Image: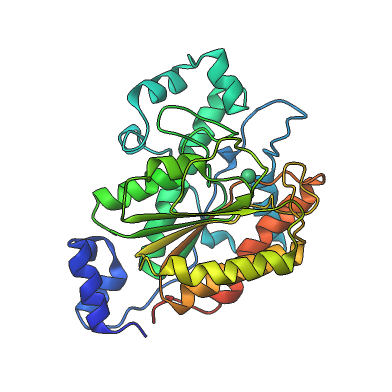
Length: 345
Ligand SMILES: [Zn+2]
């Protein structure tokens, strides 16, 4: 159980957190927190995470809906655990992105070169899905601060820079969520654990001079992006890295990055380190990737740090493999935080 002293310390650090966080508010008033729902898990998803990007595109845009459907059908998720986000507000996006970029993105006046770099055709539905996915991550971060864990069934678009999109990433959802939490004084120290197979170059660039935000990226050395930014900790992996090698490196790195003493963790559980991924180059199996998820989640739970899971990439030859890997992340959340009304009590 998280003790009162620790709660007070967190509340002092974040000043007005008790206005936003029922968990801390209850703790501070020395009463018991009783969660009225059967489960405190909240996952954010919208049917409009889908966008029309044309048939045959390498980006598996149908995966969001397929993951949701599979988790509901098998009973891992209940309907009342799913919340639909509203599109992120422009003011929130402007905490990270430039006004010029957001204006031209909304108006559909990005240059042909910018659209090429983004790797997705501009459509209104693409803009809408990007706004919604950012909101999903912001909402999941609020919820994680209350209960200890939450997920967005999208997000992790870590190649987006303040003034441009890249590599299928229009907006940097995690970066915007960090800024919103900072602005609302809900958290001060952040850890981003990026296990997508591609370096989180946009995120690394955005937070390169910010001591409070620790960026950790574990990625393929020979993978996109060709020119990598500098995270606080980058671990470059050789082609065909196996489960055992990957997990050993991850287990060695996590205690080091947790020394940052974060108030919240954003975990990008990319499906693309998978051995059958078209853009992956690594050699992880489905079981290895599930162990990866469980390793990160268990670390967060043991240290009582709220964690938000976001999807990021996945380009398996068979889309069902990508869907299964993303489902495994949510199954791991359920397993590790099972029967937990609140991760801190
Ligand atoms: Zn990726």
